[in-house]
Image (cartoon, rainbow, N blue to C red; front, side, top):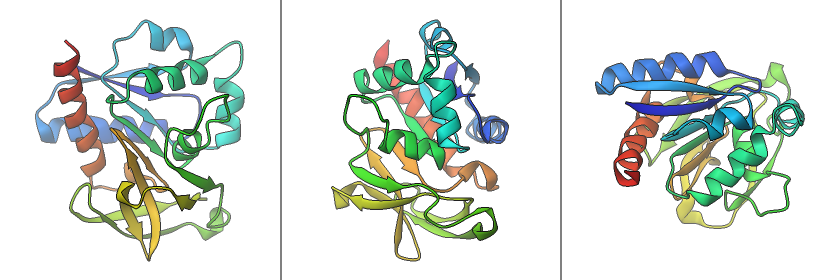
Amino acid sequence: MIRIGLVMLQGSRHAHITALEQAANESNIDIEVVELRSSSDLISSEIDGIIIPGGESTTMRLIGNSNFSGLLPSLMTLIRDNPHIPVMGTCAGAILLTDPQDEYTSLIDASIDRNAYGTQTNSFQADVQTSLLKMNFPGVFIRAPKFRSVNNPNSIIATCNGEVVGVRKNNLIALTFHPELSKNRGFHSWLIGQAVIYSEGSK
């Protein structure tokens, strides 16, 4: 059984659950989605992969860094201590990974701007060219951030209309779009596949 931890602080959480379940069925892999709301949820669970969903990054920081939750500091420590655990941050999740706003450096070798594509009314759909999946992926951009700079060009895994929209470091990917809102389950299948490898290697 592969256990995927899903950050439940705020945002498009339930769409990720649906996408994970469909990807697992397509891959014939048994998974359990572990809902992460506090540091105790993370500490008490053996996690093989992590999703940090889109939403409002400011709200997620306020809740996740609160004394009641404490999830974000524990999550960032777990990711830093386990560089091979697969992690997918989408939209606001990409912001948190790129700009964790703690005493340590970014988890992604890039800088990012919030809401760089505009407001909700500027949301759009467009093909994303991704080397990670070796295909064109239907990207959904909602109040999307934009990578301002990427330190290592080899870390770029996705582009859209000439803009970088996906960056990878080790087994961690940050995407400025919402793959869970597409019918294509490629990114969730990738995460589950990497979680299987991580699980086997950690035993």
